[in-house]
Structure formats: structure tokens, C-alpha cells
Image (spheres, rainbow, N blue to C red):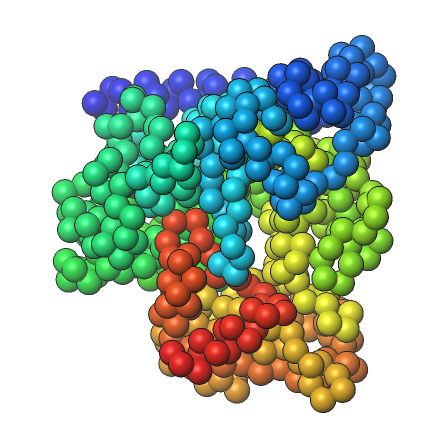
Length: 514
């Protein structure tokens, strides 16, 4: 078995050398575009928006001709526009709507726990693309010199939604993590935990209990999942076996592959559960596709997947392109991969092999390396606060919480903030989840100070229209009870970092009865 690990690591290193030579972002994106429109040109969407013309421009036209025609021919779609005209027909069983053939799987996604479920198509082409990118991510582990060959022989715990999908007519519905786990390749089954039986469990609390009971029987090298749920599971295992750290149960645990939310607010509490450091690898896997992943040690960001069923566009996230509520303005500016700048925020548009076209995914990103096409996620188009020009992003919030947690020696597991009126001006009401003792006034003061350091606009408005900041400290479990009440406990679900409109009243009513 040790020989197998050594052979795998050697092969991985050789593959990485080849991959590093292939990075030409614009060339890869043009190729991806050509494949997408070529496949979809005979669908109803493709004929409606003249994909034959786009394919010809991509194959024979000038450098930017295909993209100019794409912008002219195809409108930008949010979820409602895409679903109402196109995906609803696929959901009803119609074939060749926005992608060739029938769609057998739909991922139920709300992005965060406040919205009703969205139906995102997951085609055969998308399932294969996600698997390919997953394999590529594993191949990048060869760049981590601290990982021994024996790692490649250990178990991989993937904590996600149920693989027992809901059958609806001639299609299946479920969490994307459940859909992908239900279709893992045969060669991976020997490594995959918790195994098919436990993975089918729909009751999230029962699933965690069953994993906890089996944990001592597994030799886990990797864990994969949303930070909040992985941390909760590790705490349950440690308590069940009355040990000090998770490494007392899984001594060979070396890698945590995380995504869904920023890991930084969780890091301090998470690392208290470890006996020694492990390697963290960030991923960007959304219901719409496997968008990016960390490709080398100490990378500041994740590299976009440019050559595997995804075509990216970028909308500068500013007042010219978005309203104060995060809605798109008419005729927003859109850019290709070669037109972006480092350090600026963009909203993502995706065209995919699941039949999404110029689709506003709702996330905002920032390029940290244009040369490597590396990004970080900064928030959501509708999850930011700018009541009076403070322009407070989720990235600002995450960093401030991380800094305050470190200074106060506490672990903040969850948080959210609501923007409200205060007399004739405005206020931010923070709700912070921690199980550590902390003085709310000290927490408020330090949080306010850190946000002023991180965001000049916030600092200005704190002297003018943003007159009050409040902090309510809550047990972490309060946040999870809210998610359970919304039917969004576990899997890929996350608590919204920003509460807006009617959700504020729902949250406050919940707290009054909790």
C-alpha cells in the first residue's frame, strides 16, 4: 500500500508540471466558450439566441468578436428570468431546452437560509465536469511537500447532504453535495466515508450521530465540508470518546478541504480541536458548478476553473452597475477574464454545461492574482450594507470578526448583522454567536474599531449618518435552531451574514420566542 501512495504522489507531481504550463486564461476561456455554444446550438435557447453565429465567431472571428456578439445576442439572466422561461420547462421533463437532452437531476439551492429553494439543473455534462475538477484538485496535493505518500491511501470523509434524493416525476432533487456523492466513481468508493448507508440519511442530527459512532473505526486523512458542520461533528466525536483532540481518533488527519463560507472566523475555534497543524484547501463549489479551488500551498486565493464547462464574465460591483439593494442596473458593464483588474470587486456571470447562460450567480469576488486567475470570494451582491454609503462587505465583516476574536481570545462560530433606521438616521445591529464568555460592550467597541480600520467609508459614516452599533451575544446553537426552523440545517446551507427587509423581523421574532 505504501508503494501505491508513492506512485500516486509521483504521478501527481508530473501532472502538476504539465498543468502549470497550460495557463493562458483568455485562450482557455475562448475554448470553453466554443465547446459550450457548440454543444447547445441546437437547443431551444441556442436557436433563440443564434448560437450558430456565436460558434462561427468563436472559431473564425477576431480576438473579441465572439464576445461582442455574445453580449449583443444573449441577455443577462438572474434566477427568476432563467427559471421562468427555460429551466421550468426542463423541470417539467422537456428536453433540449437550454442544454442537450433531458435534465435528470436538480440541485435545491437557496445560497443562504433566508430564501425559498431554487431548482438548479445538474446535467450529465456538469456531473462529469465536477468530477474532473475534483480529481484536478486532488492532483494539486502533490505541490504540498509536507504531505506524505501514505495520505493518498487514507479515508476521505465528505460531510454533505443526503444521497437519498427526492424523486419527482422523471427527475431527482436534492442538495448538490448529495447528488455528487450519489454518483462517486467506483474507484473512489474504498476511500469514501461515511459510506453509502450513512450518506443516505436525511435527518442531519441522526447523520452526525451515526458518523460519530463509526468514527473510531475509520482512518481518515481528509475531511471535506462546510466549516460550521465539520467543527460541530469534530466536537461531537471528541465528546463521545472523551479525548482531547480529533487527532486522538484520526491520527492521520492532514487535510481539511472547506468551502461555502470564509474559514477565517472559524479558524481559532477549529484549531483548538487539533493536536497539530493540518493543511487547509479552499474550494468554490456552488450549485451552478465547481468554480475555483486553491492550487498551491499558501495561495492567497483560488484559481478559476477556466477549461472545464464554465465561461466567466465579470460585472464591476459599483454604483453604475448595481442599485443600493444589489439589483442590476440596465445595461451593466461586463468584462472577460483578460479585462479585469486586481483588487477590484466583481459580480460573477456564468455560462455553464448545465444550461445556465450569462447567469448572475449572486456572488462577488476580487482578483488577487490576474496572472494566475486567482480570486477570493468577498460576499454576495445582496449581502452587503450600504444604508448611508458605508459600503460594508462580507469580506470586511469576516476580517473584523477574525481580528476581534483573536484579540479577545474567543471563538465566534456564527454572526449576522442587520441594517436598521435609528431615529432619522441609521444603525447596525450585530448578532454574534459564541459559547465563550465575553463582555458585549468590549466586543462592540473593538468590532467598531476594526471596521473603521478596514473600511474608510464606514469610518466616515460612523461620524455622520451611521449613528449606532449594537451587539447581541447569543449561544451558537441559536443560529442552528433558526436554520432548522427554516428547513436548512446541514449540507451546504449557511446562515446569512446580512439580514435585510422582512428577514430582520422574522429573526427578531424568532429570538423573542427562542
